Image 1 (cartoon, rainbow, N blue to C red):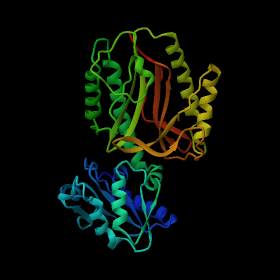
Image 2 (image 1 turned 135 degrees about the horizontal axis):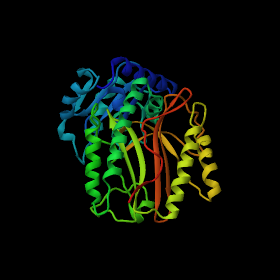
Image 3 (image 1 turned 120 degrees about the vertical axis):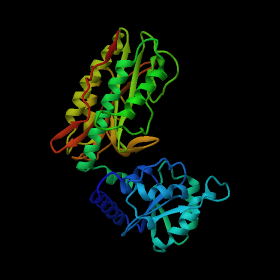
Amino acid sequence: MTADPAEYSGRLRRVQQRMQGQSLAALVVCDPANIFYLTGYDAWSFYTPQCLVVPACGDPHLFLRAMDAVGAVALCNVAAERIHGYPEDLVHRPDTHPFTWIATAARALIPAGEPVGVEGDANYFSPRAYFALADGLPANRLVDAGELVNWVRLIKSPYEIGQLRIAGAIAEHAMRTACERIEVGRRQCDLVADILTAQTTGTAGHGGDFPAIVPMLPTGDGSGTPHCTWTDRPFRDGEATTIELAGVYGRYHAPLARTVMLGEPPQRLAEIAKITAEAMQATLAEIRPGATGACVHRAFDEVIRPHGLRKDSRLGYSIGIGFPPDWGERTVSLRREDTTELAAGMAFHVILGMWMDGWGYELSEPIALTPDGFERFTNLPHELTIRR
């Protein structure tokens, strides 16, 4: 557990209210970030089937592997009698599935004939898990609840904003480490070792947690392709590297991206860096309660369009709790088509990635909306970092 009991009870109440709005008798939560949000349970056990069954009213029950159930008693806010461990001989079996056992055990919690919500797009809810759950609950109908818990997570409490501030300080420390220690002739993997150390040791006041995504640093010709990790190739003079990482504290993620040039930057990179910094200021200026993702994207477009530039991918997404393989919440995106009204308490990774043919540039900020604007979680310059 990381928050006080009142924090968790409020989260459960809001989830159950949304469930009632969708007429769900129960919700089967498989996303480890959502399980953590509702219970505080944090362990690397999500590679095997596990779930939290949330009834329309009353307390949830946690189902997971037997060896992990023992530790869960000490790691979360679920009472021991509501933590259920399925037998070890169900792990990695081709002829049966843990959700068959889970469904049988959960029948007493779910009224027959009522719809049961599932997280149809959750990373760790496989088709086999779905079929086993459906076969095991023949008296119920499974329906896709969408990102029900994720949408409840969208508005952060003061406690959560505090966690993100700490994560932001760790992100800033890790990025400063990266920008200071990258140099010509040094292997990419050695720089990443320094980044991972900085992410883990954190700051003097708070140690870091493992990130949902490893550091990404597309380099040279590969910098036009986002989401590349590292190799053992040395950094070279005349190459740019885009670095994207996150500071993590108590599973709360503050992602951050910057671009570093080793040597004199070519004119095209210097120009795109200047334009992107200007676009970041315009984008952030538009982020406030009452705005929409479409409004934010329009402000960005108005800066880059006169330069003959266009960006089709989104400018950002909601953030908070993260588990592998993603630190995004999968709710609001800052894109042309998003009409969700922004509100105080939402947190975003605003990332202006300009990926060209064979080269690219990244600049980002983790922020949270306040009643009259936004708060930055890091304090680094927006200019291109140049190491000569």
